[in-house]
Structures are given as structure tokens and as C-alpha cells.
Length: 110
Image (cartoon, rainbow, N blue to C red):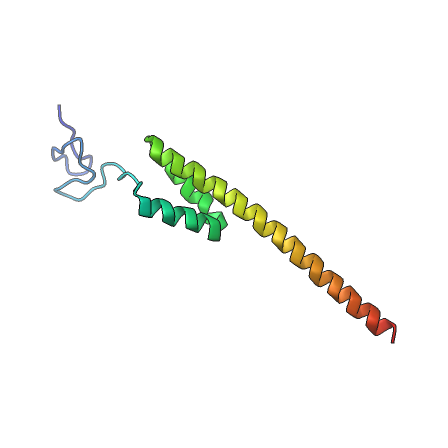
């Protein structure tokens, strides 16, 4: 028994992502697991850390092991990038604070 489109009730193939008659989305198209997509998501996870969680969850919801690996690596890179960014921010803030304190001490010592 072949499936039917829920909107226009036209018979469709099980492998179809869209109804050829009305264009209704029948099932989600799988995410790309090409090398270019992996590199793009890994780089974006490093340079735009919060977005790595979103991409990671999207890939973890897929059923194939390659997609799950991409999702896990994206999330790990996001966590690492977030920790490094936070540590760097704390270091910069401490440096600025100590410089301000030194300048204030020089001004008060005048």
C-alpha cells in the first residue's frame, strides 16, 4: 500500500520528500553530511559558539551515525570555544581593572 499526501490525497512514493502535486512537505529532508558541511559547521561552532548548540541538536536528531558525530563534535567545539572565550574575557577584564587601579593610584598620589 502506497502512502498518500495528507493535503491533496494524491498517491506519493515513500521516498518522496514533497508531494509532486501540491508541494506539501511530506518528511524532512536529511541534513548534509558532506565534508564541506562538516567544516562549515565546525568552524561556525568555534567562531559563533552559541549557534553550535543549535546545529548540534539538529544533527543529533538525525538517525544516521555520521550526523550524530557531526552534532556531538559541534557541541563539543562550542563548549570549548565558550570556555576559552570566557577565560580570555576574564583575563582582559582583570588586566583592564589593574591598569585602571594603577592610574587611579598615580592620580591620587599627585
